[in-house]
Length: 303
Ligand code: PSU
Ligand code: MN
Image (cartoon, protein in one colour):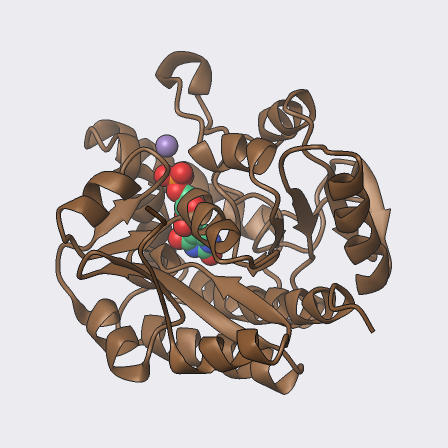
């Protein structure tokens, strides 16, 4: 008995020809961005990967199958569907076994990518340790997944709604390399920099690919987090965003928003409070991550 994988036509062909493939998640489509910008962004990101010489594989769960690559009609269906489940490691088997339609988070996308033999994955920002986690215990399953599943994840850091120092501490404890791309400090999702030093730095896709391969040779479980700064021209300064983040967080608390709903609620509120500026930046950073992921995937194909 093997995992129920269903490859798109494009990804099937890429596998047969040993072409580089980049995994993409679907929770960013269903829970991270409003319609229609969600589907427009998903299409742009896929075409960015193709232009960079790799093949995109957007991952989601439908009709009892893990879809590795969505056909255009499937992508549109997912982007408009109401009440799509947000699936992490804990929920993915249940959703599959019961024919639910589900979007994969970073954690679940890593699991599916690994099952499909895909080593590189691009997203916006990973989940992490929420502010106030010492009370709520809200720590994203994305961190545990990075510790155990060997996929290199390209993100613009952890989302700035989180407690970034605590997120970094957990990643270090769990043995996850955090590699800033082209700079010495960690990016902070909507902002290209933060006050936190990056544990590791790489300046080329080749260095990142070499490290990915060396981890396999050493038998180390888990992946790598590549912290790729948002392009400067698209960033929003931390000082501009922080009051909106604070406001969204206090509304979440007063409205009793908890568990899986926290991150989607905060992203949607910050979108409203910034008059859409946070979404424009989010789109720019995901596209930038897709391009770097494609370059890494190409480096991982033996010449
Ligand atoms: N990146 C984005 N927007 C998103 C996400 C990532 O730009 O919405 C999603 C990812 O699926 C990630 C999830 O796994 O947010 C984190 O959710 P939580 O904090 O509940 O673990
Ligand atoms: Mn959580």
